[in-house]
Image 1 (tube, helix red, strand yellow):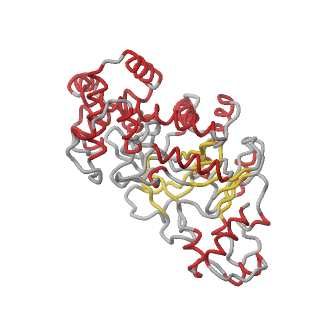
Image 2 (cartoon, one colour):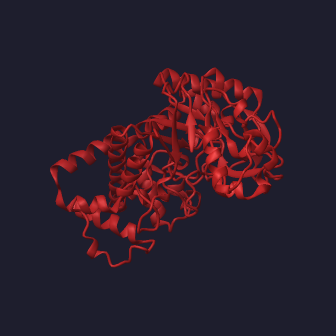
Image 3 (tube, one colour):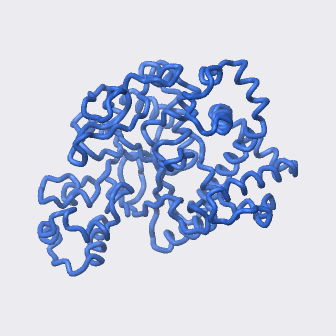
Length: 438
């Protein structure tokens, strides 16, 4: 559950919505997708009067399925592709797939069958569309498709474990590979074309129902990603994938060892010398997909926690300031109005708050963090600002029902005094949290 008020950058009426990643939609396959159930969810939101559907990043994931460690900052996750949609187009005969729907390889088999059908049919309309898509997205798709083809060839090993010529992007080796790996590359291009085509249809349907799509942009990218492999100059990483420091956050109230994420840090001097072109391209893609975008770990645009690579914890890191103000200035100069929300949770300094407010970006408030009996807690409703986006809980929290049922999570007496009501049941308390957010 999320609510926001009218404010400078978003320029929308006060509204409410729901945070739900598409993988959590119901379905017979191993995860939800952007098929029929996504359309039913949009209809449900509209019927309830909700105006926003928020979700986690949509990029292709590693084996851990974390959408915050994606293989690309542009590509869509093929596991979200609707198999029903492919069958509706006549490219998939599901009876030909000799696997059960519950098999984790079923979706991949369907995608390969559909791609073979698509290319064999040589339909002029669809050939034109995929050619136009490939041309429009060439700035990332060329490297991403080759990167993923190499991933398949080298048994999913990370790029920094590949043979030296392709690890170092030797031109002769890459050109030879583009010929050898053409079938795999065409498969990957097909999957991306289908993902974006389906997503644009979802976005149009949401717009028809008065629902805006709210995306999420991780501030860092994965070490094993097409971005780092193809554009190493933008990161503090050498040609073999080695790093002196990695990203994370320091110890706080939630963890005494901090969080060692392991992502490469940016070479901000290099990025700034190009007018932040890499960031602009990334935002261009996100704004094609979403009406609103959350910047995850916004405080990393003021300073990053640099952790020595050899350290197993985040304890011994240090804050290093970055030119986030210059980046945001360039972005607003390029896009004029940016519908951004800053994820400003955790220990936030005055400098971070000033950066956010100077660009009129809304921050986040989470009610599950509020009731610790401290009247100055910024998450308490009386401390909210009209520019805040308010949540009962986020994807990092328990459900509100689960949170209420475990009194170790909050001060129940303080909660009851704050709402001026005796809690009779966990379900009642859940609805009270919704009311507080509204």
